[in-house]
Image (tube, rainbow, N blue to C red; front, top):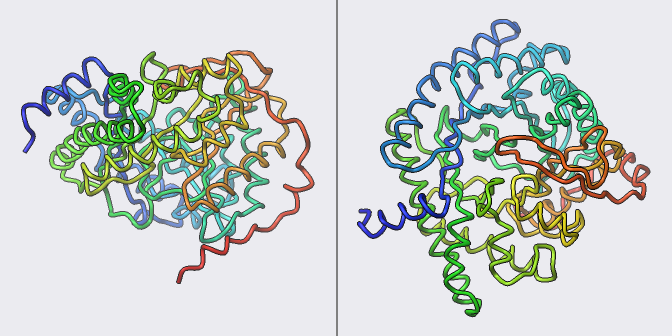
Length: 454
């Protein structure tokens, strides 16, 4: 039962504190769509997506109106395309045609994004994996709603350094292919270590092979709610601070659970997970940086920032787990620079650097996210940053990711506008010392000793 007090609290969180459901994501398995004929494969993919998702957007709007909870996005994730298209796609152009099919399906269902143009290569690449990866620049420059992800490492398998080397080049090529739009293609491309099967958030979403034929995942967000709650406990001890975060996260998750269950029932599709992620937006007051500064930091990036983020991340998860038995995905705190006005301000005032952001990723939900860097950054340097993040994820048995945007024709300090939820970002300084001899060694960094648990 939901008490009247919870109803009033939820209304306040929505009206005054910017609580929203960031996304309802319909995950769809395409494993039964495989065909050696490219046209037949495309038709199978399009028809299945349309059949399952034809009422997704309308259902989201109905729930939003009926319950008064803003639902910002509706999205689709599909089985990694490299797994199902290998027998039909013999060239990069073949894979791009599948990307365009996904884009058409996303447009015709009305969703914001579709994820799953992906490859899982943590231990090695098949010919299909490599061909798909090499097709990414053209796929992203010729579609509007398609999102890509590549998993290049895991705690169990180590880090595929051949894939890391390749992804540095692919990110640069994607930036160049979309240079007329501030290299926006890179905002739809994520490189993972330990990618989860049930992530509803773009650009890294895909429908894992361990998932059911179709599931409803909901991503709920409430940085403004957490920050507002902490205003009432200024100066209190850490026990009070932690308890406040946990209790507030519990309330936020309850709202997400409600939306997920209603959407599941109305669509006739099983409920998967609620992902409670403090995913900020460029709107003032909807900022993870604002939460950390409310804890007592003068500016994000100051000494104590990593400890504050670790506290926040842990207690968001503790509160979420109490509220739902099906918390999953990337639950915790996101730190995307371009989507968080507080992070942008910290970069501009000089307190937050790329190196400090990397330290923070060791305790955050994901990694280096939505960071603009100079367009002339070498591909090997981008690969080095990917390798560093993958190492943090591999050793710490957590998901890490890189979404860097080398903005063509832009230099350090210039501001870049991406638009919408993607926000805007200052171009940040990158360490200019060379790592190409290290990155170009090739092969694989083996899994750490603590991975052997069988």
